[in-house]
Length: 315
Image (cartoon, rainbow, N blue to C red; front, side):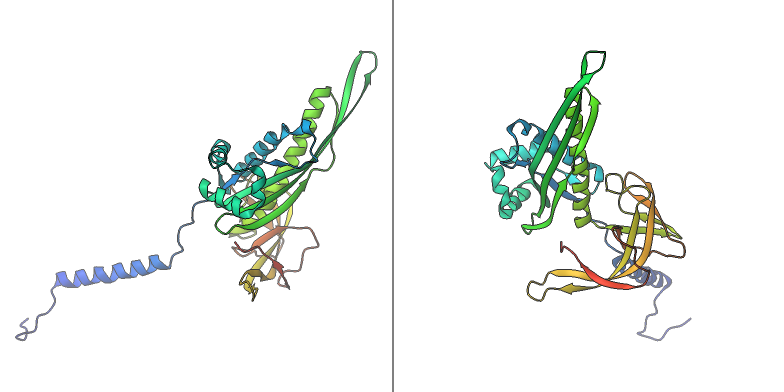
């Protein structure tokens, strides 16, 4: 077809190029709207535990066992990259840190930065009592021992970027008994059980403070939670779930005090997997994705009923 002089019409190649350009812009815009990939796991370092002056001298050797157990439960929880203890000891010695100096959050923050850790865990063993009683076993000329152990630990978590304490918990094993075994074995078993009970509870509380339990996938009544083995959940436990709304700020500090929360319903945990758990919603209840869930310690609220905001640590 003839064209007017001085006016050029785009050819088929130019149209195709323009179409591809527009299509590319559309894809770029769509990609920009997609959520960014999840960041890497935060790094956590646990400094050697400090013994309170009241701790018997004979129990000092148990501090290493306590530290190893805490590290094991933090690793098992799969929420943090945990710094090797040998590296922590090397940095502490190189920079001549005193364990007692970690009571100052600024020193803890400095050590955390040297280790490349976003969180530093400080623990103080307040009590480790071991009591033994023995009696004769009739007719066989042997003795059996009963041992009772109790462990109490104060634990704090410092966010190294700010120097703020973001979690402070006390773990108490209560009286742990081991009856009827050989005297040496009974004492060791009672201490081991007390350490395991306290470590599991404390690690669970820290994870709850830093990474609350959330619904990450919902298929009908089946809900997948972002908490797996080592996350302080057990099959059969009931959870209250909430949707979070507007946050409340402290007008003086600008810190988030909490969020408006609306009850979404209850869940019962049915399966614990290495990295996540499955739960079932109550009949007639739909739990939304991203709902925050907490282990029930009270009567579950009715779904849809607004409740007062709960305090929340601002990370």
